[in-house]
Length: 439
Image 1: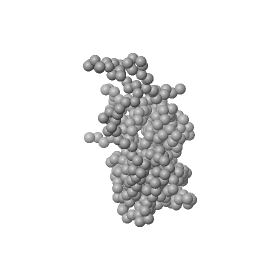
Image 2: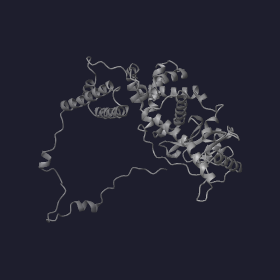
Image 3: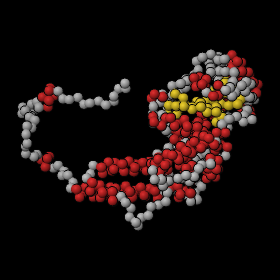
Image 4: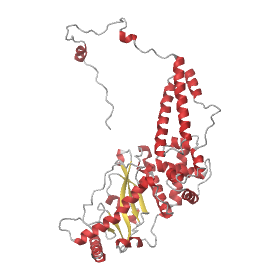
């Protein structure tokens, strides 16, 4: 049983009570009051409670201020930076919830009076939804800042997904999903921006689009016929991918505080194979041997992939040498090339988490089951945008959208390397020395 985090304040003992009434330095004994006494000067200065009429007026003014503030924010949504407007919207919502709790403590007549004050006068018509105003905007930066892709790429993706037209138009559904992925916006904020009647409609649209992405774009995973060509500039013949691991934080200690993803990428940083949802305490070897990549032998010698030092050395999985003071130059050169190539893994994972900020947020325990599903959708969108030649938004390149949480790395593999893997690595190291330009 988990230990309770709630502690009770200890009751005062008899000795503590006696200390409170012990004689003062002047010799006069302070006694606890035994009955009613005349009011002191401090009692006379106490603030009198507000009368009902004053209290109802105060609550009404607060409600009106919040209502007008949210209207004002809605009118400026297209002009304000999202990094400013989204936190401001959350603050206003928190204030509204606090006011609602205050209203629940008031008598019913006062509640009715305060609620009436939040209604907007007929002279102030409600503005159209943020998304409808965005569609009519001529600003070329509006779509990239809001959805992490350009307007042409948005409609190209919309055509590829074939979203059904139900209670919401397909373009609204796609915009809702991309906006949540890009900004980790809560569903209540999305509902307000898109003019929805409830946050549950935004939630339904988000997961419907994620499902459409994983089914309609699944062909973007897989090897291409010229997969080995991209690694020729590294002088790595027959190399067909880079194997790497990353963590996605979750607020769930029974899962190790994170879920692990194993990914195989090509030379352009596109995802070829992806396996997500592994327990945060697992080692890469445990994940690899249980993954589809290992079980179906998608890679066979003489083809091979590069992997980090946390991976085992196999005939088709080549890891770096352990470098010491007396390591030969062939080992050093190989590790330099290996490190340069493997940097693309970190770059691809970092770009996915920066572009889709939702994947870098710590997910709550009840949402952990949906996280692998959303990660797959985010990586498929990454491939789609890479194939479209879509430029990365400037803020994503600068890393200003996401402050990544520090998560534990992966320890080096401690076992012995496979003999076939040792021979393959030595042959590649000798080849790199021969192919290295002579200075």
